[in-house]
Image (cartoon, rainbow, N blue to C red):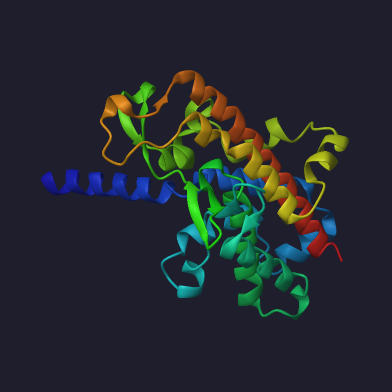
Amino acid sequence: MKRYITLIILSVALFAIFEAKGWGREGHNAVAYIAEMQLTERAKANIEKRIDNRSIVYYASWLDCHRAEHDKWNSRRHTCDFDIDTFRPIGKPIKHLKESVEQLRQYETLTDSAFRFNLYAVLHQMGDFHCPGHNEYHRYDGTKYRKAHHSKYKVYFVERKSVWDYHNFWDVYVLRHRFGSWGYMDYGNVLAANLPEDVKRQLTDGTIEDWLEDSARRSIIIYEQMPAKPKNAPQEELSVLSPQKVNDFNDLANDQILRAGLRLGKLLNELFDK
């Protein structure tokens, strides 16, 4: 009996570890599904014939599932760095994303393994880089960039009556607050299915850098409204994640899921509708 209980506890712990990455599985699936809803027939066919005729949703969390298996995969950052003064993406994350995009522009010349890796990286990083908790802000001091904001600190979560890691809140709980029973199709059908075409065009206008700058400008409020406190600050001094804040952040998260999905869809059409 004791061994059985231990296995249950271990399984729950492993599940929590897996979930605490990006949007969690449902969020990444929702981004991929919204993107898939935008695909032309030609783009969809050109993608699926190279991935065993499966939906891109199937591979939305591949980069999380395999991050520990190979140095090349593990080097792919799941957070995006921004200059806090310009909100432009900087550093290796945007470099790696753009490298994968450039590889896919010549997708017909890629081996199956190269095609899949670069596609799976784009699917996942476009989602992660729109997650507010995965945006990190840096300020240039004249010599080098120094980190100004990141989400790996503690806050007091009123609804749970406990201290939480802010990053984990953004990875897991924010999407489950109001719509915990939703699957990825619910997100797609509710957020994107009836969206007017002119709104889609407005949200997808620009380059990848423009999209991520927009994400950074919108996301910085999570740090302004919930600032970090000293590492060993007592509970009563921590920023308080109130029910109203959770509601506000849930709205932000859903809007970021929508933007990520629409932009990913547009990008995939540009790459594969030929």
